[in-house]
Amino acid sequence: MSRTSTAEPLVIDVAIVGAGFAGIGMATQLARRGRDSFVVLERAGGVGGTWRDNTYPGIACDIPAHLYSFSFRPPWDWATLYPQGAEIRRYLEQTVVDEGLTPHIRLGCELRDARWSDAESRWEIETSAGAVCARVLVMAVGRLSEPHIPDIDGLESFTGTVVHTAQWRDDLLAGGERIGVVGTGASAVQVIPHLAADAEELVVFSRTPPYVVPRDDRRFTVEERAELAVPERAQAVRQDMLADADRAFRQRLGLRPDIDAIRERASSHLRRQVAAPGLRAALTPDYEIGCKRILLSDDFYPALQRPNVVFEPSALDSVVECKARAVSGQTYDLDVLVMATGFEATRLPAAVRVRGRHGEVLDDHWSAGMVSFASTAVHGFPNMFVLDGPNAALGHNSAIYMIETQLDYVVGALDHMARNAIDAIEVTAAAEEAYTREIDERSASTVWLTGCNSWYVDPRSGRLTLLWPGTAVSFRERNGTFDPTPYEIGSRPVDEGGRYP
Image 1 (cartoon, rainbow, N blue to C red):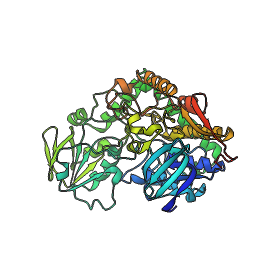
Image 2 (cartoon, rainbow, N blue to C red; image 1 turned 135 degrees about the vertical axis):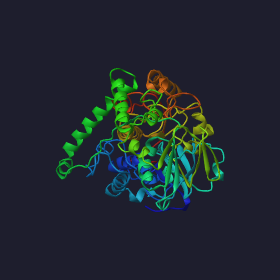
Image 3 (cartoon, rainbow, N blue to C red; image 1 turned 30 degrees about the vertical axis):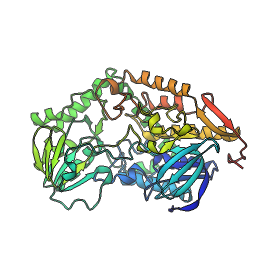
């Protein structure tokens, strides 16, 4: 993997933007099919995406390891039921090596502009390391790539250190600091117990408390690890985990007794771990379970009861030098502010850099919320596929299963183009509109649109734009196979490898 800068454009068949799970998975599928005319453009200095960027203490996945990995790779020797962040990063780095992807990856290569050329039937791409011309553009930038910093009055005046969990530095803390953590989402419940152990004082600013259920993580025994190294056994475990997780979708439909059972599981976990009535009341959510992400933790509640921890049941309102003021009016003297405030998930920042037919900006096309066909193709943007984008995520199951479904769809599209000497395909407006209506209709009765406001919902349109409103298996049934019917087709000669002469 190297940094590349050339005066002449790199002419390539497929350009993949992003070297996280989606980008590496796409590259693997191309390489295995003998398609060597592709490049992965990665702005950072290493691969891994979310798992490269997030290194805060306690970083881990809340999906079991054998489900949060590629089904088409040999079983990895996972140490625990839920994988640690560093272990996932190593898994992706090893995938790059094993699959021979190193020559195709350009590090330090940030996408600056991508424009579709009708005349050439290709994407003309400008990067920080030079120009690229590609027949096909695959956007694999992910939903968790751009940290969100809330608009807090006076934050720029803070005399201490402000850091987002996705921009953690190992030398940030020496011990004995007065730390404020803003947020109580997935990253917060992981990092708070670790920060509490060494802080002089830790203040947790909570706008809305989360539902938390037991994590019940454990280390695999030597015998289990040996058994799970057998591909057939690992695949069986994966399928069992997938089916078990998919059953939880009934909760998101508000169906009984499913939603009552998960609500009681969270409530009993809170009762067991928090005895003080006042703190327990402050930690009890006032919205329906499942509307926001249900969190897994065994040490979050105990950490909040340490003598050096203050649970502030309101959001951070303003900052004046070292003093942080909560909405409640309470003020705290702090040395460090840790922003566990999530990501710009519903508005992909890279969308402002992508222009389709007639110069339409992707971000403008998505001004009323992200839309697509099959959660992968976008009208007005020929030969472009978006991975882990509109309605391609889940609130109850593995993102990797969803990504693999999309990879199958994209590979099917590329194979169809090669077999039929097609230079350009574009999904029709009617197909995109029909799919969007389908998503909206399926979403209407879910807890995400009836239970509260969450980051899954586009704030400008009120539409559910991040999640697939169904099971993981139903997503594969609906979107796992490419069908050319809803596409407009253009063609000119290509060779047997799918490249232009």
